[in-house]
Length: 263
Length: 340
Image (cartoon, rainbow over all chains, first blue to last red; front, top):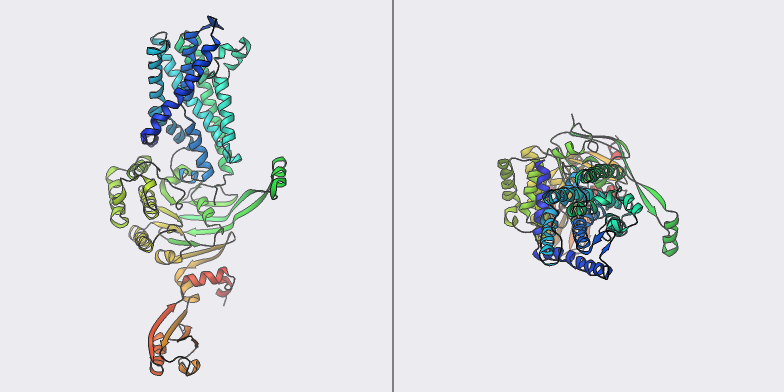
């Protein structure tokens, strides 16, 4: 266990190593948040609500949702696929640690160093200056935090499984874009899932992606409470386990015919 | 129980075959075709604990692939491997605790952006090495490899020679029983090479570490190993004692006498009576070559000095390098030569 904690802490340090990179990483999310803000404000021009959401709620949902989705940075995917393409995965396999576990710990180290501070700061600034709603209550805040952390593991599992496909394609840009487009659209990071037709929204909430943004955002807003919230988090947890297992399966298949590039 | 045991070990890769040009690229897209490349073909190995083995072969012979099979990184396509009694691929995590490997410059275990010290501490934590033991290992590497001079530098700022030393230090943090080194001295200057070899000799003789070393640079192997395994085109050509190879196939000695008045008398006359030696004039030098077990350098030299006005004298001795070159060029078959 100590080994995995060490891996996470080393990645934490890595993320803090370059001040400029760290600050830019935080700001890049902000630019996109602002773009979405103005886009949706135009959408609310002349109407009080869409699908039952007021402007303040939409703003809050999108901010939480977007930041939650961004917790697991693009770099996690790039890091893993470059290991595979450049062959340095050979060195990872020399270590007495589970490959998936080690990658997950790296992601958690990154999240602690970069993702979480960015999320907390942005939400606090949003509440103070931009009319973003505070959590609907202490229980909502705690529930959203749990759903959010679980979402990090869930998204890591998706990213891990997708990046492993590099073993077969040796190209990761295409896979990564497809994965990101799919995750953003289906998780609610671009459009709140409630804005979809009711049947579609209900269906999307059964998919794993909703756990990444829709579930934490709705718990935060107090739209999901009590048994509804517990059920959604339980579904999220179940998907997390399933996807971690899928990742292990892909890993086993990949290493069986692993071809370390460059001999 | 041998440290490493392999029988009939095979590894076959699939590689896409593509016709040249745009047409080829399109055809590959529609119907990809593959060919099988056999990187390791029926290799049998038995290495005892405490042995130091040099594994040599030309580029693409299957050296690195063999190492990756032995370390558990790759799964064999056929045959079996046992390392300290375990299947290294299936029991990768357990195997990893007992072994270490370095794969040259572009496969690094070190964190690129962090100071070297952090990478080493990470190895310590991953393997759970007690602090006292960790310090002791670090001190050893500091004394002989001089790593203490750059412990605080980010890995990306290290020179090639420092990187190799850093990799080795990192590999030794957890006291591995078996150390695999894939081309450890590529790109190093003579002084660093010498230090590295002395260090490896020390690990092997002093600590009894089992070492498997691949190298193009045969002096590496001559310095560290007692046993030589030669591989070419995925198969083992020779497996035996390094000294025996040298004694049997590297016997030629060449003496080069630079003289004041070259050309006469005839070369054969100068060395007449010295035994089975060959002599010829080459520019201003008389070149005498002979089998060192059949003629003595002292006798030949004494006679030549008597007959010629010698200005300078130089001796070359055939090394393992010549033998290996002759084998690869197909001019020497060690197994044929072994038959009585």
